[in-house]
Image (cartoon, rainbow, N blue to C red; front, top):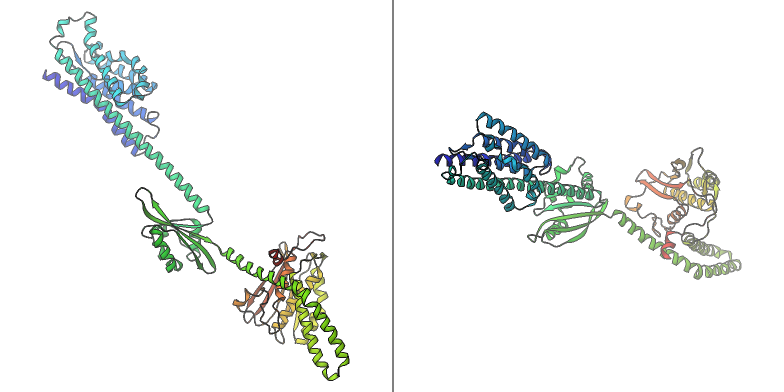
Length: 579
């Protein structure tokens, strides 16, 4: 009895070793990424085969046969587990290998194959129960394997009796041993199935975690790409105001200050340690409020740019706590520039309204006054002639201001024609030379050969050139040089008017084209505004470059590809807004 007990314990250990090895190998292989594949298909089938076959052979090799001919062999357990957990191909390979091995073992140990191979009679039933086994619960699996163990034990005990090779009275003294073997087989079945079930659950859980991690990394990468593509400059901070991440736009912003900065160098650093504009009291206050759960926004000036900065708290809904801050910077420099230009447009609108009123309310009375002054001058003594001359000059000056108003604000049909810019310059050159000679100045013409003809209004272009040239001459002293040059650049023809005067201070350059802004004692402040209006009607641009002590240069760019037909001029910006 003691020997039978020891042999049963050995059989239990040999049967359980298959599940133990499977659990160890799959766990190691999945952690080291050796096996890969899915749960059952692929490399795990090979592991299942390699773990079950040795256990079956060892159970057959070390089986104990009592003096009454009742063997103790639990190889049915790894056989059933391998067949039911595996695929058809694995089941047939395992059954064939195990049958061949057990037959060899039976022949070498002079044991009857009748006792060794009884479990293979159940092979067909195991295949039929495979799908039910894999879909069943843990209890179902334990009961099914236990049932096969009991059937196998009964076949081993009853098979010789049914064939008439043993007497029934032979088994009665060994009944307790038989029952013990059945109990040991059921216990081993429960243990093997539990170990296999745990191994597959751990494998499935690990694969789920790996799949979720992979999906998380993919989604995080997508989110990072979206952040990088956004025109906003984004940065995320943790609860201690350290940088977690920033997108490419924000990184490019920092590269304006430090060209060699990279994302790894930024991550983990305090936000306020990066650059000066981050350490301002407004930023620090907004970040602190965001960490307390209060969203906010403010304008930040980083010359020459202006940013609209938003501060949004990041909250963990599970613990209801603010864990960080999202900072979004939007470059609104162009919007601010546009806002400044709109202010100028509003002023131009006011100029247009004033011009319209002046046209009807002042111009006609002034004409009447001037006419009566001429009559009075003819009947007055010559000694009063200079008084009349002064009054009439001031009336003419006032009328000139009115004309400038009208030229700047009017929305009339502009006749354009194909003409050469050089012809306009040459027609105006004698007048400019006469003015320059009176001032002791000289004029240089640098006209490039083969400049394309343009679609222009000659009168307006003459007025543009005359205004720019006279401004340049008035800014220079004696021996000053006025340079007028032309050249082609891409799809544009450039007209440049350059002087050698004292230059314009930087703080005045931005105001040059504003109506009423002038640095002259008798200027109206409408000349350059009128020039800008003319250039805009010709679909061009005008810009100014000036260095104090060197001189000033005005550049007019006119597009070459303008339709060669009579067109209405576009309404000036002032009139567009006015409407």
